[in-house]
Length: 216
Image (cartoon, rainbow, N blue to C red; front, side, top):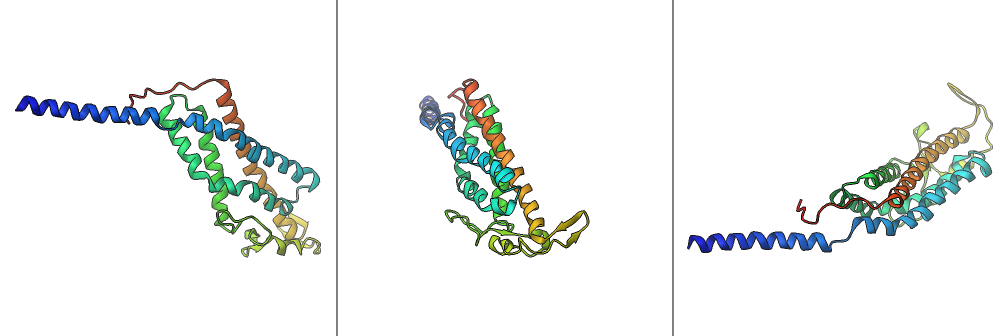
């Protein structure tokens, strides 16, 4: 009886481990998922942000108010997909010894999260799937009373006699424009760097994969 019980226990353990191996073998490869997503990250996120930065610094002469709606139009859809990107990141950590790609993916997630948090701090009132516009992007927290973009555009040509320590010959529109420009450039630079790092990590070499017999 004891022998039969022991055999039954061994068979149960073996079946459990076999099921785990099958699960690890057939589950989606996170590296393959990342490589599938990478062209879109490059074209729709990185390249569009780089173009926006060029427009901001040249065509729009560092006027952040003009660039903020295009910025959220580019980035907000990726914040909506953050859950999927995080899942790929977790899969990379579990499946591969080389964490270079995972590190860059973590930086991308962090940058998207920071931009997304600004959606709820007053910079934008957009919700998932909602298109960014001058009506739902709010600026001016520096003054303590955020207003939509269209409100600030009406103040663009106000007299430049607004004064704060270190701020001269500027009106409220100018102050908000500088604040917004810095916000855009800081976050765009981090996102662009993360996507560049992902491309380099995926092109340089195939990361060493962990054994499929790893059950954790």
